Image 1: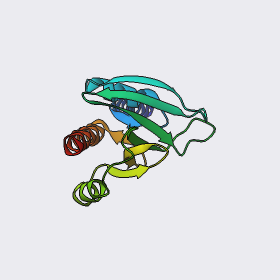
Image 2 (image 1 turned 30 degrees about the horizontal axis):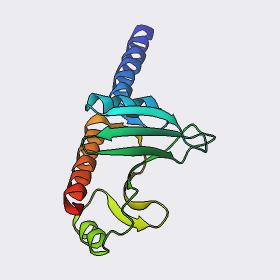
Image 3 (image 1 turned 135 degrees about the horizontal axis):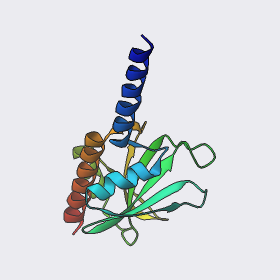
Image 4 (image 1 turned 180 degrees about the vertical axis):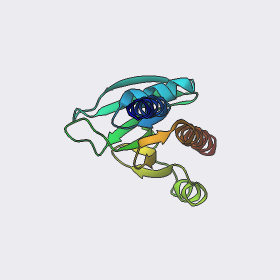
Amino acid sequence: MRTSFILAFSMATFCGGAAFAQSVNASYPATVVSAMQDLGYSTNLTEDSYGDPIIYADIPGKSYQVLFYGCSENIDCKDLQLRAIYENQTNTSSSIPATYNADRMVGKIYVSAEYGTTLEHTIIGVDGLSRSSFNRTIEKWTAAIDFYNNMSN
């Protein structure tokens, strides 16, 4: 009986560890970096002005940020926000964000005098998100950036 318990515990620990390695968790920024790098994106993990993790990433045609939210004392983060800022585009026609936002599920556009045109997408509850779900989100995010780049040119 004891041997069966130890074997079951070992399998659960091993399988749980394997599942963790295949998931993305905002509390462990390295899992986000790893998932993005596995998709071929260059990344730079650092800290924002509050001390929370932030990833600077590049895709063909645009650099963007991955911000970490819901952090407790700069760790144990809960959520992610993808953000691409088009700094010199404060004169974006109001019809572009309206048209874009009406037709797109991933990424919303807004214009502010401070930042210019900004494309954002928030991912709530990144606490063991499967790699396939994360990859799909990043693929949709990349498509959103490409769509906006083509729309605004």
